[in-house]
Image (tube, rainbow, N blue to C red; front, side, top):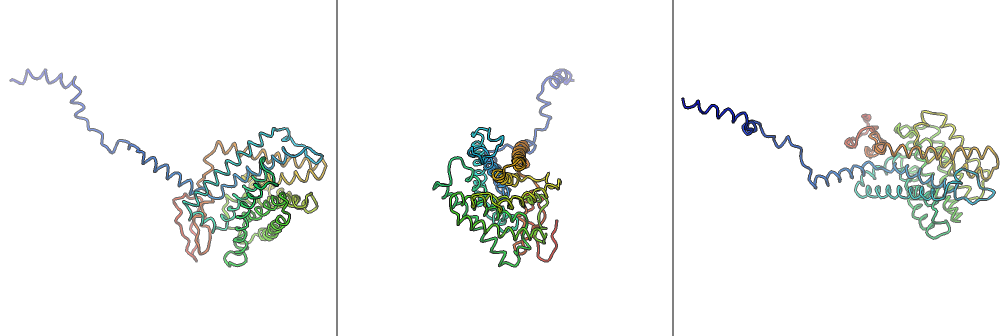
Length: 409
């Protein structure tokens, strides 16, 4: 009977006091709460991201600097060439020289950044660099940084070939090219598993281009004998490579489909040979014209395949051909030569800036998941074959190929 006066008191406490309701609710468990990131976690995540970039930044990325530095050389040839009777008329001659200086500075910054990043890769990821060195495709891209530095030196608006700085830098940049020549060309003669017929592929022409760029720079310095030596070394091996690749022996079959545009190096090598011979001989003679016509024919042969041409991201090759056409137009006065020079140089500039803008708005393409350069890390040291798993991520870099067993895709 004494419980009745307590009823009106207990009921309002349940309806108006929120404390009993909160007491009934289960408190959130610590596992359901989002984990708080500490400074050490942020440092570890940033470090792992940086190491991942180092793992993916192989020597093939120097194709970017090849395009920029060759474009700088084209602009220097067209803009800063002296106004004489031999000078060609081009719309770029009306562009201020500050635009060329800006392009050259962009090339310098890009090349310096990539070189620094690759130097860190050599220090922190040496095994991956060694895998590139042992790979029949990756080793050829080791010429790309030195070719880029030589082209940047040739296009420099701040130094001339007669200066001591130019000659010292030339010696620094050509030294690794000659060392790689000795390694690559020597193994073609001595190592049975690395005969030219088994390892030759279109990227092998990078070594030829390195010798020819060095020959042109040496000729502009006045070192004619050195220029002739490098030119003969490059052309002798180019002829052997050209015949081997034309026969389509087994060495060219182990090439990822994403690297098929490197076939455009076929006309880059004779174009650079034409430029080098003009610098050596001092004029556009019959030999230089023959090399230019050969590169033009190979260019037309490859352009006639639209499926291959639309996938080509190699601005460097078209730019070198445009440079050779400038020398030809200076020697041969005529509407055809002048029109050919305008067409090739305009195509080179258009392709370069289109791809620069496209890459700026699609930065994710810089590190694609199907990057063929990643297969350099999947090499068996016994048979030196690619595992054809370039479409996999970096987490699958532990695949091994046993000799005598078929490769697993």
